[in-house]
Length: 182
Ligand SMILES: *[C@@H]1O[C@H](CO)[C@@H](O)[C@H](O)[C@H]1NC(C)=O
Ligand SMILES: *[C@@H]1O[C@H](CO)[C@@H](O)[C@H](O)[C@H]1NC(C)=O
Image (cartoon, rainbow, N blue to C red; front, side, top):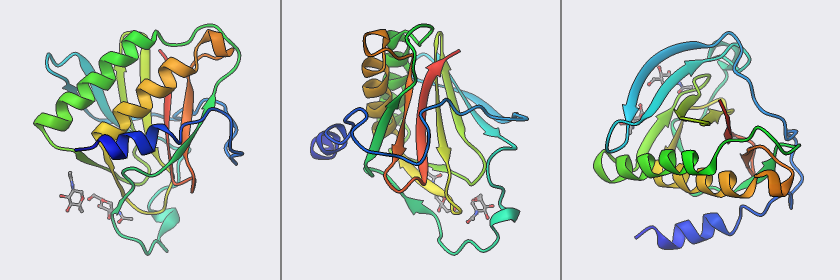
């Protein structure tokens, strides 16, 4: 059912092809507060958290927001690998997160919401991933798309590519997904 979308998304992940305003440096959540924690996947093996970070725009700072909840599933994103090689996540650990997202996609639902200022964080062993909403409006994304992006970045931003993880930044900059090591 999602094959076409998956193919379309994957074909747009070309590493380093597009210029982006966001430098390929890892995002770090400042003054991190954990608002909620739960475990996902068939065996509850992946930790998932909703965070609050002081270095993201707050709702009050963006009170002029006009758009409502916006579905960004299937939007193209451009991959940036973090250089240099060394200390990246084991892509097989990232695969566990990708599989847990697919499991939840089938058993809970395809869609999840990301409110302004509240990234979603997931971790399994050496692999960590964030979904960061950079828009002035709440976003809805698809678990199967996040799963595909994790797989793509984890396996294509390795030491062979002089990298240790990376991100995939939406073409319109309104969100990005980061894959890094713990
Ligand atoms: C996302 O937020 C919208 C608007 O508040 C709500 O209607 C919808 O049920 C939420 N979707 C999920 C998957 O939580
Ligand atoms: C985003 O969603 C949260 C929770 O549903 C809501 O409190 C907030 O007003 C929404 N923000 C915007 C900018 O729509």
